[in-house]
Image (cartoon, rainbow, N blue to C red; front, top):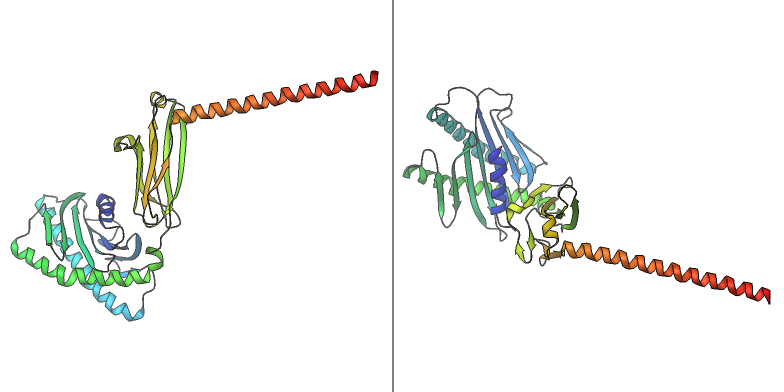
Length: 336
């Protein structure tokens, strides 16, 4: 689960904002559990398109596929997924023996995928492997720099490296890009839509510390790539002072992000300017919203309240004087 959460975020953030990705999240379990020995989740960008496990030994797609591609899709799945199963099983056995794990349940995970750039050219093909939550290796392939590896356990020899380069260049990447293009066309209404973010600025008084929490919330946007930054006096606020910042899904397929900053009671009496700056694909320019100085805001609110109160009191005094004067005028006329 750790490699899924961490590496998925790193992979998605590492991909260029205008590109698209096809990723496989694979899990191999060594030991007795109620779960399938091997399972794979296929993702197009952030949309699940298929699932595979060792119980049915077949891919179940989320949407109906064109019948003319069914045999081709099955062949692609047999080549890539079954090869992934065999290699992960082999490595799990190796690590179990190498690390002297004789009993219990052990899990190997793999996150692998390719990207298609906005000019319809293949981008990076990347893979990360972990065993029992510990990273054991990664590699990156592109057409210019070829294969770059960081194998923590059992480094590749020259023959293995050349063999992997051949497989990646001639089998894995072509199949991945082909499937990515196919499902990108089928799911274009979902993954290629663009929804502008809505921004809310919120302030909350902290009763326990008499401080103030300011929050910047961007919500309802798609795709998920967004840059949200809080500034104090023109300088980015340090990450250790900010809470939140995770990209979270909404129920309608869009995303949201919230960043909050706590301002102490002492800081409220200082003169500071706070800004929330946001960049998104659907915004021509960055959106810059000023919070203003909390102290000035409080003072301004008090002054406005006092001015309104003075106006109301003055109006009441004038009204009562005029009413009293009118009554006296009427009485005098009657007496005469």
